[in-house]
Image 1 (spheres, helix red, strand yellow):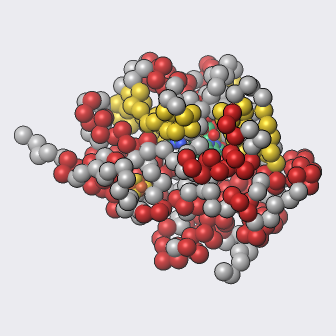
Image 2 (cartoon, rainbow, N blue to C red):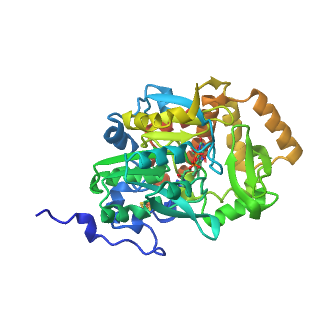
Image 3 (spheres, protein in one colour):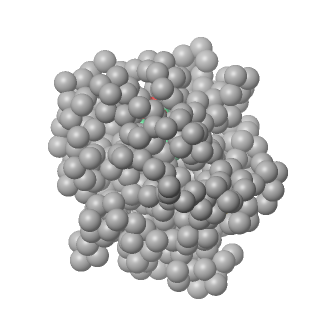
Length: 398
Ligand code: FAD
Ligand code: SF4
């Protein structure tokens, strides 16, 4: 007879209890389960261990002598892709939902961890352990709010599932990798998306109210490669707002402290990452990190068209100029913001250089945030690759 797993002894926290990571908690869901037993080791905000978990997952950590790996992590391939027949209502063309459905219907996995929305609020996340293609499809489109995806982990052991796909963002996947061996699985596949600037549900409302002309009808939005936020409304219309016209002075405290302290934008520990920012406008950006990731991508090769990734321009000046502008909460008048958006779209960074622009802007901002608010955490919490990225820029002393 085998001993009962030790995680059974831990008790999940009540939804209203303060989390071990306190205000840095990203509500990843781990603490809603008996796997809270491992929280000190597993929580992305209590124990940053990306390099160690890269070795566990990809057999090596990223090569610090290769600047491309500072940015994009361990990978064996990168490509731009789009579905030839996009999934209606997906965030982009629905590559994530399609891969998950193929894995389930071909019997490669028995269930998929993903996140639907609650019945009465399209932006309120509702994590599920999906067992049908319909349940996976109902999880399509971003819930741009902190989502406790790992809260369904207890259901996996209870269901007796042995082969599982988890879809998630970086902080969820770091905690998942740390408890992976306790889950009793034979095979775990991880399909990640990049993630940045996430918000609580209340924070999302403030963002919509300050930025969109019609906050209540927004069904979907994205910060796009043309330096504009694109909102899609219920009636199918699109609204665009230039980044440089965002009311940064009002929005400064809208992003969750966890996301202001995150240096895993590109989901280092997933097997396959599907985003958009390293690809031309309208295309998705795919990073294959290991053989499991390639196996997943191969399932949809006949449903996508692809092109090689490209890189154009030089981001450095734009990033350097954005640092004091963000700090001072500068907001341009809308006509100037539109003009600036048009100019930068023409001459600004494209493809992988746009991805580097976005990573640099967020890492410098987040580095300053951690330095100012959690100076005692700075050294251990910021991974070495992120320190190298930040060191390229001149930051304010305080
Ligand atoms: P779909 O087929 O529509 O499927 C979306 C999947 O995402 C679903 O399976 C769902 O379970 C999952 N999901 C939705 N919301 C969440 C959530 N809150 N937490 C965890 N899982 C979730 N890509 C970039 O390149 N740059 C970015 O800056 C960027 N920011 C992002 C910010 C957030 C908050 C999120 C959730 C994603 C972000 N992405 C970013 C990824 C990108 O927006 C798309 O999600 C990705 O390209 C997949 O598109 P799709 O059409 O294939 O997905
Ligand atoms: Fe727990 Fe996750 Fe919050 Fe960390 S981020 S305290 S693991 S719920």
